[in-house]
Length: 355
Image 1 (cartoon, rainbow, N blue to C red):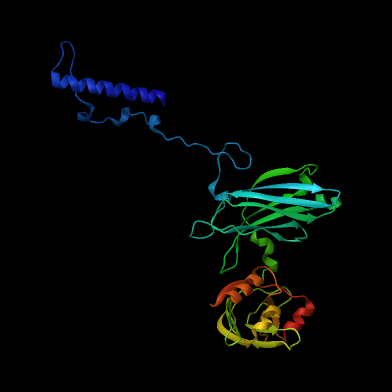
Image 2 (cartoon, one colour):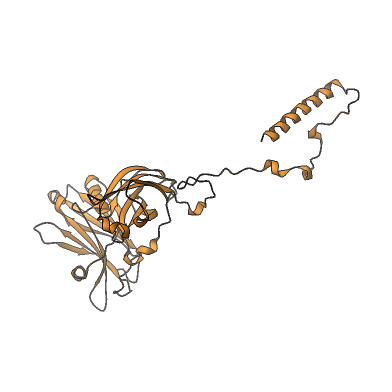
């Protein structure tokens, strides 16, 4: 760069001298040159290498080393620490921060949170707080797993990074899998790990689909309305027939009272049905705290017993997204619509839900 700058300064000085010579007349013994702007450009004499733009490399967020980074494979990185107490049998995972997460929608940002579990058991599944509108969240949260030292080397830490969506199913931004067999936990370990693309095929067999519901409660009339809007990507367990004639059964349960059951119409031969039907129950405000609403998607089997596909339970005694939806309904004067993931049944539950 210094050579190029010096050349530019020399050229400027020569040009200035020529300009002065033109106004004062030619000096003896010196041939007057024309200014460069009057000359035709000869592109064959231009050294293109002098004008090439250098690409400044960026350090890898995990290794700290410089090198090329494939934009398509870069889903950000996450910083966390691990420590283990053999006396107490407790594994502590401290989420510190994440950097350069990939936005999932047109807004260009995300509302990220993390879910942590130990594979292959996937239990317990712990969850961080949601951080609004950021691609570089600061977590600063600790999660504790009760694990015997003899089991450590057989487990893998899974961290799933999600983008929270208030009206739809949360989308997984990426994941990391860290086998604990390769980590020396005799002292605290702090790591940066690249976030990999979420592998959805791992959950395909257990993915039964989603149902969109709208909940509203009218205090003056003491009336609960469950609007069954639609479902998407309905799937059947392997032992069930692969035909879909779905309807939805809504069951309202209160302590000491007989459950109330109502259902929608049946949509024939459809894996993504749309109902847009409202189901109304009379319910006193004093019973809201103890009420459970079960929504079951059922296949109408024309040749035999009906077959439940999956269900979701919403109420004050539930947890996660279902509890959040219920609380939003109580605290809001408008209908609240959300997607809910369908859970499967045991054999006994399936027989009861087909009624």
